[in-house]
Length: 231
Figure 1 (tube, rainbow, N blue to C red):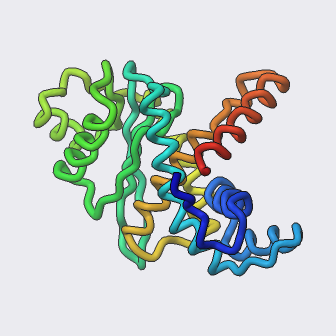
Figure 2 (tube, one colour; figure 1 turned 135 degrees about the vertical axis):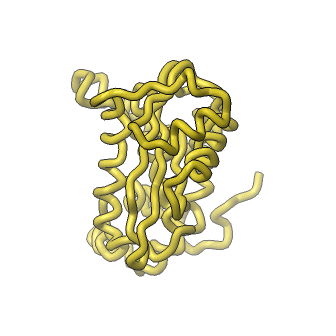
């Protein structure tokens, strides 16, 4: 088996932990550098940047592959929503699809919020996960036009507060965006948001819905799986 870390001076454990700290928590590159230094690891913030760019997509792809293979998502009801993101003073749109349990299915960045962008986003989700029974959206006309083009208009549902699941799913990313002091280009936004969504899914343990022993058990399993996935 090919060793992904063979040409790096640092151990695989250090690289995995560094990538996890930067992607999962709302920390800047220099904050991760300081935290590692407190633990006796002298690693530059530029090294942190290089590691998440190099290994983040690989780890996220393994997580997605495992979750799709195991079917850890719902085809009952999906929620679609979009938020604006500023890149160099220009407004872009980050589209997000989640299932009824809050599992992030897909994130997609576009320059516009028209029918073509909505159609491209929905096609992307359907191709990877199949068709759900219902798709909940807000009243943006682009969704209705795209669903009509796909012949799926009868499955669209709109209503007040019905789409809170998708709107709430933006919050972890918004906190992460603040720590990064915005994004420099659309490719970086697409790359980071995809990685962040996959790792957020992996550690989304619903701690507010279970007791302490159950949460600790789930957390241990998630960390063990992370070490295997990132190996």
